[in-house]
Length: 382
Ligand SMILES: *Cc1c(COP(=O)(O)O)cnc(C)c1O
Image (tube, rainbow, N blue to C red; front, top):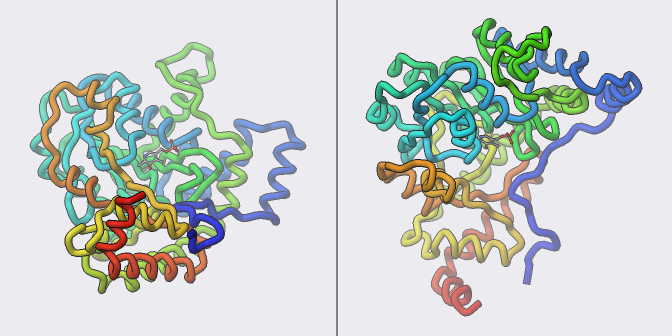
């Protein structure tokens, strides 16, 4: 019997309704200027100010942003990236006709491992792509020092996250690309933002999101329609205003999960680098089957019976997904990535989730631990 009347979802967007949002929506609709208008430009300016970067280019999605960024930076060869990320990071490489080369991740921070990256460097390497996994800042400065190549960042999870040196995610590498899709900390319905300190690159990206058309209809290169709509920009602007409030809440909910579960054998957490701040885009637990007395998949199935939805972010990791097994002929083993894929379980977290929901999920996990063998036996009979 389900303990909750409704399934608790893993993620939900937190949206601001009313006020400036409604007025701006009406303005867009009344003006007829539904793309390439003032709201996208304003959103870009406000984000640049919030992050502390000179240039922000709004695009239709993070995938599009990564695609266009790589198009502007790398002509041919390989891009080294972690396998421990969402598939879009790799797809952006492949859609550019570049070869993805997968590096392993660190078992504690889940971030791409610098040593594994350097082992994969070759004369064919054109760029390194790093990822702020679940919104925890990865060490982009160290990677940029190590490699004499562009380091680009998939910051899809990271809007509002902070590096250990106190600067915002979005300020490092050649450029960082955020996602504004509904499960991310800041949403605009759909959309992406490319943040960069390189004004020339930003100018080129603005041409890239217009099919590579600099305005003369004499295309310079193969761009895309990568524009953000005005309605998305209006949503993004409204949500940006309240983001600091919701991020504080989100971090408090993540801390509450950790507090409630830290004494439980068999459950551990991603390590956020000291001094840095994660956005907790996802609350992902590591499950140790022997210590918990229940396998990761057993825990997921039992939680589902209790009305708690979960995900296995990111299993299978990219290098084990069908598309990549075909695309990449030689693939080194990635032991830390493969070990994580066996153990991760993402539990519900959204910014406006009541604290009581965290407590109920944690109580369910404690109870399932106490009854591990019976739960496993019961699941076996289903
Ligand atoms: C969501 C996500 C993306 C894709 O973002 P879209 O805006 O949906 O294109 C890329 N990378 C990571 C790590 C993501 O989680």
